[in-house]
Length: 105
Image (cartoon, rainbow, N blue to C red; front, side, top):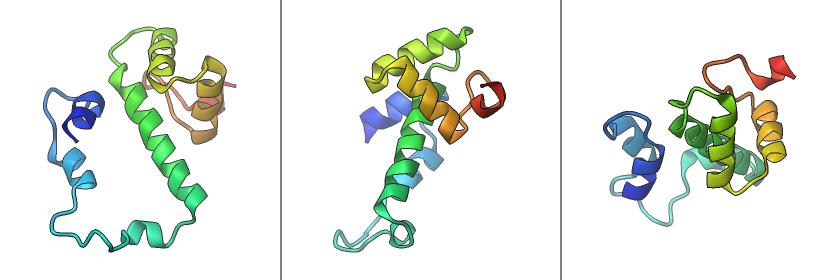
């Protein structure tokens, strides 16, 4: 949990909103999360993958060059540039506060 927070939190401190999403206090380990009950596996995986990509991109948002952001994100995610660009476009994720890649390509 701590490693994840350090890697993906974009501010100078770890906020409660980051921790709150991931910690369930006194939850029965056999209980299924209500957010997952209404979704099929592919939707759950899509949401998780999108969150991981967004957090990875945010980690490098301080870099001025979009290419530098992509290069570092690809290295962290262990995927090719083409794969990252395809996923960014499909998921509507923006780089450097730009419009969605759907609007650019």
